[in-house]
Length: 109
Image (cartoon, rainbow, N blue to C red; front, top):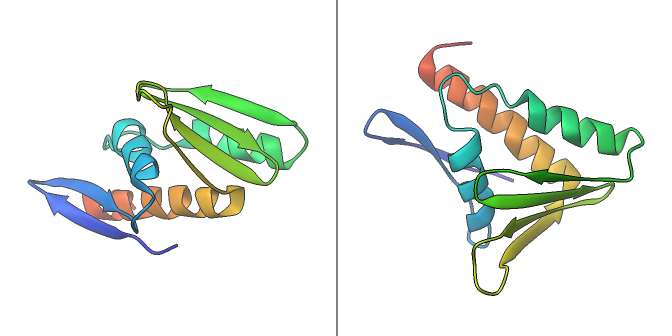
């Protein structure tokens, strides 16, 4: 999945295709910081891919359900528990690429 890194007043922000607003929000609230390396997300994905049946990550505004094939990002504060579901390999690819692009933006790589 392609994304665009937008400079918003000196801060890199991810812009994804329509329908992935919750993935954007997850990244923006959990993986935006200059010092955030995201290893906790990648490690959780790898654990599921290598044997753990499922994992639930409860972060700032979202619950992230990881299974062997899919990732479901749930907005726990929305009235109807809005969610976004995508293949786990796509999720991992977007996260890894985002972290690399963010590090390049900040000159860390």
